[in-house]
Image (cartoon, rainbow, N blue to C red; front, side, top):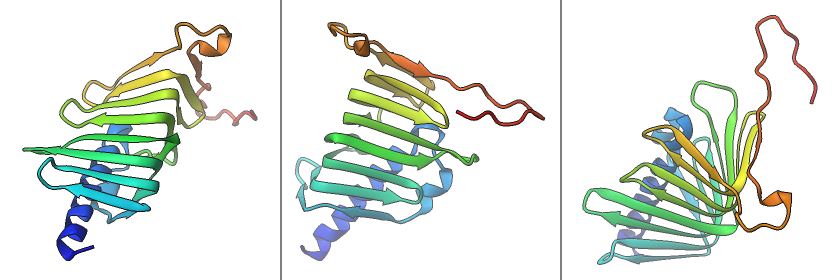
Length: 180
């Protein structure tokens, strides 16, 4: 790989990681950390502004860790436009800013639209934060409005096609922690 391709790969990876770091009140310090990206292959199309990472893709930046089989990053005139990651499953984990807890997401596909700050977890989607968990066929999150939407699988023949949420009670001051 030439030095120019290495620079471009690093640039795309930095943009990818910075975008993934922004949803769900992620650790702000991560944005200033170096990006580490590993994949079996990387292809870059300078004309179309598309980079594709394939094969056991691992992206890390600070507390952010993402694993996928395939990641595609596209750019527009303003910079990063969209990220699409697929896998069985795609998984990410990142520390929540100012707290000693992590947010974790799993799905068959994760899409991020930077223009609209919209994150989509599609296909067997799960999102965990602390002891709380959301499950559904699709989870949508808008970082601008902090609005979540979880959709079940409408034609499922079993109750597992419904949306599931587990919300653990918050510990009150002076109250001992309960065992699960």
